[in-house]
Length: 325
Image 1: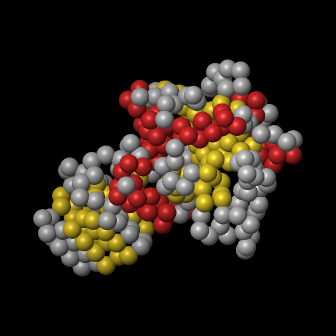
Image 2: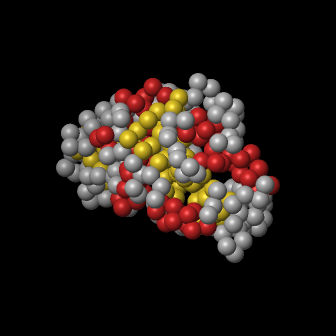
Image 3: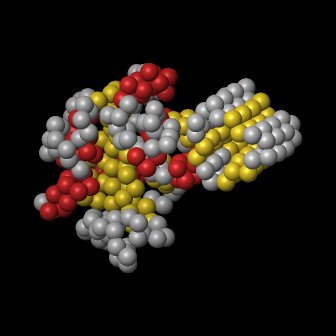
């Protein structure tokens, strides 16, 4: 049983720059809770009892929210990178906060990803194969935007392929790994190291036991505003993906103190946060309406993110946009 994990939450989220000037991407709210909270809830549900948040950008916002983890049913520690260390360096730095015994295994979660895959099954696969590292892989319809990971019949990784116009396979790296302690110990905790470009290829070159576990459950990389909004909508419409999704009613998540006119329609996985006011006959579809937002009568907001305290006039029609101050 794997009961320890590292969550990589140090990225700046440059593709979400409109949303991450004051909030690191892992702390953006998805379906009413920060991305990191969803990941912690899934880890805790899978039997993980201790997790380290590997922080860098705006590191100071995590601990006031999560504390020691007691209110989330898990022990939380913090490893701060003074300078970005890459995925490998971040893992090695964070591992110093864990007391790993022997060749104990540890889960590694990418802070940009939400997944509904079976963590316990991935752990069982890792142990049954005697793997050094096990990657969670997903199959996608169009793999041209991704690097691909072909496997042999036993699930062992054959190579890592860069993006190509005609991919050989459709299995891609989904951003959740299991590392044995012995692999982590080979990574410098003080150097910039990429596990994707250095650690994994080096392990392959040494004939290490690098395996891929395929699970095609829900998975999304929240690297763009569009995918961020989609993730929130998906978790509300499929609340079983994350134990942290709570309070959904009628296909939407509406704060108890939001002011919603009786003639307004809130649908398609929308979130209406605390203090928001929605005017008469408005239609809010698949959108995130943040704290303190005011939307005038007869407006349509479809597939949008509305930042805190924004005011929108009556009769506006806004589709697939980020609206900020």
